[in-house]
Length: 249
Image (tube, rainbow, N blue to C red):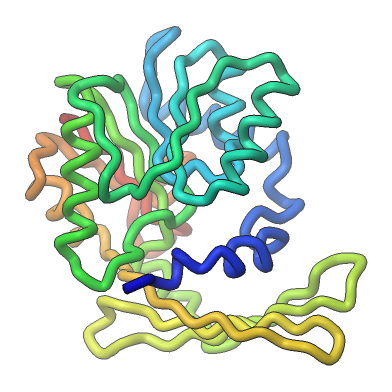
């Protein structure tokens, strides 16, 4: 049975929103600086970017001298990532794979999972399998950094409806969001409007609190977990903007 993330039209139609103009090279460089400060990787370290999308972080880390492997399920994003790497004469490995299946035993020094690319699966055991894969893929002492919209920040800023306009077009996106009882899952209904036509995408995601994510990481074997409220390393408290976890194998 296919899931929402298997629908290629979702990724194709909403590319402009998911990877918008605000995610520029300058922003990516700043984010890479913040990640390096949190992880303190050595020069030439092997980095896994799980759910790399069109590869903006892969390219930035490769440009800084790291050995990078980017993994994603969406072929069109990987093609864009390969083109970016080729245009800058960078040697990056890109792999098309489901995050529940990809693992390389004790291969990477560091692993990244960014931009809420976690919690896609109705069965929590599938999420745990992703974390197990990441744990197994890291060398002893290796570090994982995850970045997502945590439950606590979402509660503070939650809105049932949000409108977005694609600049320079007559294209609009209406995001409708509801929370399942217990706050473990959010249901999304995104309506893409193009002139007189519209298309509806429905999907759900697990939403993690800081304590839940920390507990899951320890459950699969990570020995230390630190939580932050942004990639800047701010505290995960009532002012947190995002949920960032740094876990050590």
